[in-house]
Length: 81
Image 1 (cartoon, rainbow, N blue to C red):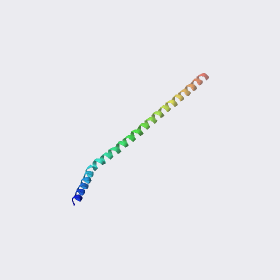
Image 2 (cartoon, rainbow, N blue to C red):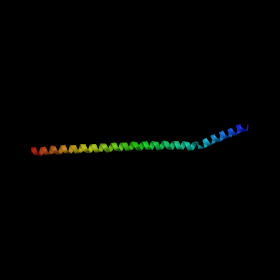
Image 3 (cartoon, rainbow, N blue to C red):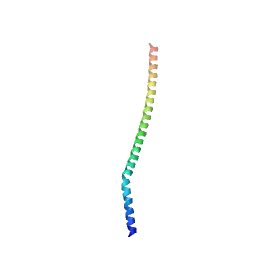
């Protein structure tokens, strides 16, 4: 019976060690999850920033084109007068 007692006490100590480490394991899993969510949010924010910069650049080009056309129209009107 000595072998059975040793196995049961060993399994009890394994279970008690597991339950003692369980909060730590849960905290590590939560920490990893939070870090991955934060990285994903940062990546999306960087993508939005890049798109906003591209949009601003395209709008600036459009404004320059409109200004050029307006200047041409003004010159034509001045020539007509």
